[in-house]
Amino acid sequence: MYKDKHVLLIAGGGTLGTYTGRELLRLGCYVDVICPEEKHADHERLTFHRGYATEELLAALFEKKRYDGIVNFLHYPQVEAYKQAYRFLIKNTDHLIFLSSYRVYANEQHPVTEDAPRLHEVYAENEWLMQKDTYGISKARCEDFLWQECRGERWTIVRPVISFSQYRLDLLLNSKDDVLRYARAGKPMPLPLSAKHLHAGLDWAGNSGKLIANLLFKQQAIGEAFTIFSGHGMTWGEVADAYCKTIGLRVEWVSDEAYFESTPDVKAKSEIMWRYDRAFDRDMDVGKVLRVTGLTPTDFSSVEDGIRTEVALLQK
Image (tube, rainbow, N blue to C red; front, side, top):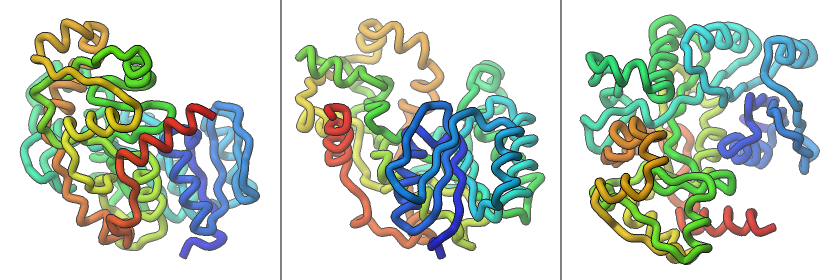
């Protein structure tokens, strides 16, 4: 199914794209990656194209080959921009994957399945959220375009949870180098006690990339949406424990008020993320994605092992 297939990863040089590409190479594909960074291929079937995915660059690539699959990792804050990109891409591939997010889900159903109520449906009357959330709401609007205007075409929606890697070690609202900075300083990281026992919407990027890659070329994936998650079932408290065991992080569970007082910059940047995502219980049902990909829990690494892998990469 995968051997000698040609796949294009648009904006595929980052966290999810890197691991999706590795899995596709392992499966026997040729992988082309468009990304703005200077990268050097370490595999004979891997090719990097430095730049942004403009229509001119894409047209030049499409003149040379037709891609069996395209995974588009770009984010489109405006649905009209995605509509234009989609119509161009779908003509040049047999299977197009759209990167949505688990953040489209509201907090109405537990465990969360792919047909659970979405944020923009539950909070349709919340004008502040509809205007300010340029990520979860924007993703949902792009999904609606696919559901409503592109039925019968060969697309798939993927909704990854937070996927950590060496580029971003996430813990609730803390990201990038926050966790390592606290660990190195030996200073306790304050975390909101209200989230400690909530299921965490977080996974290792190696697991997420494997799932995305294994949805390509599956007939059962066409016209469907999938939560991208290995289903480890950990709470935020357990995720914090994993960081403590692997990198020596110290954690202090405090009230929400104390947490935001200690991290005012986080609150200013992440109010929507906290109120309409991290404060939700993200108990995800992964039955659908495992059934279609054919993967099982034994195919995934633990969060703890994922942290060790990424920290080792940072130390090289």
